[in-house]
Length: 190
Image (cartoon, rainbow, N blue to C red; front, side, top):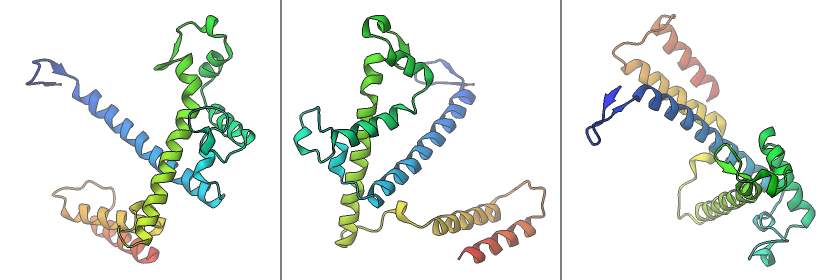
Protein backbone atom coordinates (compact mmCIF):
# COMPACT_ATOMS: atom_id res chain seq x y z
CA UNK A 1 0.00 0.00 0.00
CA UNK A 2 1.24 3.47 -0.81
CA UNK A 3 -0.12 6.93 -0.32
CA UNK A 4 -0.98 8.96 -3.37
CA UNK A 5 0.40 12.47 -2.96
CA UNK A 6 -2.17 13.87 -5.36
CA UNK A 7 -5.33 12.61 -3.65
CA UNK A 8 -4.14 11.62 -0.17
CA UNK A 9 -5.69 8.18 -0.63
CA UNK A 10 -4.19 4.78 0.00
CA UNK A 11 -3.63 2.75 -3.15
CA UNK A 12 -3.33 -1.03 -3.10
CA UNK A 13 -0.24 -1.04 -5.33
CA UNK A 14 0.24 -4.80 -5.03
CA UNK A 15 -3.16 -5.43 -6.64
CA UNK A 16 -2.67 -2.67 -9.21
CA UNK A 17 0.76 -3.96 -10.22
CA UNK A 18 -0.43 -7.58 -10.36
CA UNK A 19 -3.38 -6.68 -12.57
CA UNK A 20 -1.19 -4.44 -14.75
CA UNK A 21 1.04 -7.45 -15.32
CA UNK A 22 -1.91 -9.64 -16.30
CA UNK A 23 -3.27 -6.91 -18.56
CA UNK A 24 0.12 -6.48 -20.24
CA UNK A 25 0.40 -10.22 -20.81
CA UNK A 26 -3.05 -10.15 -22.42
CA UNK A 27 -2.16 -7.18 -24.64
CA UNK A 28 1.09 -8.79 -25.76
CA UNK A 29 -0.73 -12.03 -26.49
CA UNK A 30 -3.31 -10.11 -28.49
CA UNK A 31 -0.52 -8.44 -30.47
CA UNK A 32 0.97 -11.84 -31.35
CA UNK A 33 -2.46 -13.15 -32.35
CA UNK A 34 -3.09 -10.07 -34.50
CA UNK A 35 0.20 -10.57 -36.33
CA UNK A 36 -0.70 -14.23 -36.92
CA UNK A 37 -4.16 -13.25 -38.20
CA UNK A 38 -2.70 -10.78 -40.70
CA UNK A 39 -0.17 -13.42 -41.79
CA UNK A 40 -3.05 -15.84 -42.47
CA UNK A 41 -5.02 -13.21 -44.42
CA UNK A 42 -2.00 -12.40 -46.58
CA UNK A 43 -1.08 -16.07 -47.12
CA UNK A 44 -4.72 -16.81 -48.05
CA UNK A 45 -4.77 -13.96 -50.58
CA UNK A 46 -7.63 -12.19 -48.80
CA UNK A 47 -7.68 -8.52 -49.84
CA UNK A 48 -8.27 -5.92 -47.13
CA UNK A 49 -11.49 -4.97 -48.90
CA UNK A 50 -12.90 -8.38 -47.90
CA UNK A 51 -12.97 -7.00 -44.36
CA UNK A 52 -15.71 -4.52 -45.24
CA UNK A 53 -19.33 -5.62 -44.96
CA UNK A 54 -20.88 -6.04 -48.43
CA UNK A 55 -24.38 -5.67 -46.99
CA UNK A 56 -24.28 -2.85 -44.41
CA UNK A 57 -22.55 0.39 -43.68
CA UNK A 58 -21.50 3.48 -45.61
CA UNK A 59 -18.55 1.73 -47.30
CA UNK A 60 -20.36 -1.40 -48.49
CA UNK A 61 -19.69 -0.31 -52.07
CA UNK A 62 -15.94 -0.76 -51.37
CA UNK A 63 -16.34 -4.37 -50.26
CA UNK A 64 -15.05 -7.20 -52.43
CA UNK A 65 -16.35 -9.87 -50.03
CA UNK A 66 -19.34 -12.04 -50.74
CA UNK A 67 -22.13 -12.01 -48.17
CA UNK A 68 -21.26 -15.64 -47.41
CA UNK A 69 -17.59 -14.87 -46.68
CA UNK A 70 -18.38 -11.92 -44.42
CA UNK A 71 -21.16 -13.78 -42.59
CA UNK A 72 -18.81 -16.74 -42.09
CA UNK A 73 -16.11 -14.46 -40.69
CA UNK A 74 -18.58 -12.90 -38.24
CA UNK A 75 -19.83 -16.36 -37.24
CA UNK A 76 -16.25 -17.51 -36.57
CA UNK A 77 -15.72 -14.50 -34.28
CA UNK A 78 -19.07 -14.89 -32.50
CA UNK A 79 -18.36 -18.60 -31.94
CA UNK A 80 -15.60 -17.51 -29.54
CA UNK A 81 -17.98 -15.50 -27.35
CA UNK A 82 -18.59 -16.83 -23.83
CA UNK A 83 -21.80 -18.81 -23.25
CA UNK A 84 -23.36 -15.91 -21.30
CA UNK A 85 -22.92 -13.60 -24.30
CA UNK A 86 -24.40 -16.16 -26.69
CA UNK A 87 -27.40 -16.49 -24.37
CA UNK A 88 -27.79 -12.72 -24.24
CA UNK A 89 -27.66 -12.45 -28.04
CA UNK A 90 -30.25 -15.22 -28.38
CA UNK A 91 -32.74 -13.15 -26.34
CA UNK A 92 -35.06 -10.64 -27.91
CA UNK A 93 -34.10 -7.05 -27.27
CA UNK A 94 -37.16 -6.70 -25.04
CA UNK A 95 -36.25 -9.78 -22.97
CA UNK A 96 -32.60 -8.71 -22.70
CA UNK A 97 -33.51 -5.20 -21.63
CA UNK A 98 -30.37 -3.42 -20.56
CA UNK A 99 -28.72 -6.59 -19.19
CA UNK A 100 -24.93 -6.58 -19.25
CA UNK A 101 -22.43 -9.38 -19.69
CA UNK A 102 -19.05 -8.08 -18.66
CA UNK A 103 -18.78 -4.45 -19.64
CA UNK A 104 -21.22 -4.63 -22.54
CA UNK A 105 -24.95 -4.93 -23.09
CA UNK A 106 -26.73 -6.76 -25.94
CA UNK A 107 -26.47 -3.85 -28.37
CA UNK A 108 -22.71 -3.60 -27.84
CA UNK A 109 -22.19 -7.35 -28.18
CA UNK A 110 -24.23 -7.41 -31.42
CA UNK A 111 -21.76 -4.97 -32.99
CA UNK A 112 -18.65 -6.54 -31.47
CA UNK A 113 -17.87 -8.86 -34.43
CA UNK A 114 -17.98 -5.92 -36.83
CA UNK A 115 -15.69 -4.00 -34.49
CA UNK A 116 -13.23 -6.91 -34.40
CA UNK A 117 -13.27 -7.15 -38.19
CA UNK A 118 -12.72 -3.37 -38.43
CA UNK A 119 -9.70 -3.71 -36.15
CA UNK A 120 -8.37 -6.56 -38.30
CA UNK A 121 -8.77 -4.40 -41.41
CA UNK A 122 -6.93 -1.47 -39.81
CA UNK A 123 -4.07 -3.75 -38.75
CA UNK A 124 -3.97 -5.29 -42.24
CA UNK A 125 -3.81 -1.86 -43.93
CA UNK A 126 -1.07 -0.73 -41.53
CA UNK A 127 0.95 -3.88 -42.32
CA UNK A 128 0.56 -3.29 -46.06
CA UNK A 129 1.64 0.34 -45.67
CA UNK A 130 4.67 -0.68 -43.62
CA UNK A 131 5.64 -3.32 -46.18
CA UNK A 132 5.37 -0.70 -48.94
CA UNK A 133 7.57 1.73 -47.02
CA UNK A 134 10.14 -0.98 -46.30
CA UNK A 135 10.16 -2.01 -49.96
CA UNK A 136 10.61 1.64 -50.97
CA UNK A 137 13.52 2.00 -48.54
CA UNK A 138 11.73 4.67 -46.51
CA UNK A 139 11.46 2.62 -43.33
CA UNK A 140 13.40 -0.12 -41.57
CA UNK A 141 11.97 -3.60 -41.42
CA UNK A 142 9.18 -3.98 -38.87
CA UNK A 143 10.44 -5.79 -35.77
CA UNK A 144 7.38 -8.03 -35.90
CA UNK A 145 8.59 -9.52 -39.16
CA UNK A 146 11.74 -10.95 -37.57
CA UNK A 147 11.93 -14.72 -37.69
CA UNK A 148 11.33 -16.52 -34.40
CA UNK A 149 14.98 -17.62 -34.28
CA UNK A 150 16.19 -14.02 -34.34
CA UNK A 151 13.74 -12.99 -31.62
CA UNK A 152 14.68 -15.92 -29.39
CA UNK A 153 18.39 -15.28 -29.87
CA UNK A 154 17.91 -11.62 -28.93
CA UNK A 155 15.99 -12.61 -25.81
CA UNK A 156 18.62 -15.17 -24.78
CA UNK A 157 21.41 -12.61 -25.25
CA UNK A 158 19.42 -10.13 -23.17
CA UNK A 159 18.82 -12.75 -20.46
CA UNK A 160 22.51 -13.63 -20.36
CA UNK A 161 23.42 -9.95 -20.10
CA UNK A 162 20.93 -9.34 -17.28
CA UNK A 163 22.23 -12.32 -15.32
CA UNK A 164 25.83 -11.21 -15.75
CA UNK A 165 25.08 -7.62 -14.67
CA UNK A 166 22.88 -8.52 -11.70
CA UNK A 167 24.28 -7.90 -8.24
CA UNK A 168 22.51 -11.03 -7.01
CA UNK A 169 20.81 -13.75 -9.00
CA UNK A 170 19.24 -16.68 -7.16
CA UNK A 171 19.29 -19.91 -9.09
CA UNK A 172 19.41 -23.63 -8.27
CA UNK A 173 22.23 -24.01 -10.82
CA UNK A 174 25.72 -22.58 -10.66
CA UNK A 175 25.73 -19.22 -12.51
CA UNK A 176 28.68 -20.27 -14.68
CA UNK A 177 26.63 -23.28 -15.78
CA UNK A 178 23.61 -21.09 -16.57
CA UNK A 179 25.74 -18.69 -18.63
CA UNK A 180 27.45 -21.52 -20.51
CA UNK A 181 24.09 -23.16 -21.27
CA UNK A 182 22.68 -19.84 -22.54
CA UNK A 183 25.78 -19.43 -24.71
CA UNK A 184 25.29 -22.95 -26.09
CA UNK A 185 21.63 -22.20 -26.95
CA UNK A 186 22.57 -18.90 -28.61
CA UNK A 187 25.26 -20.67 -30.65
CA UNK A 188 22.92 -23.55 -31.59
CA UNK A 189 20.18 -21.22 -32.83
CA UNK A 190 22.32 -19.00 -34.64
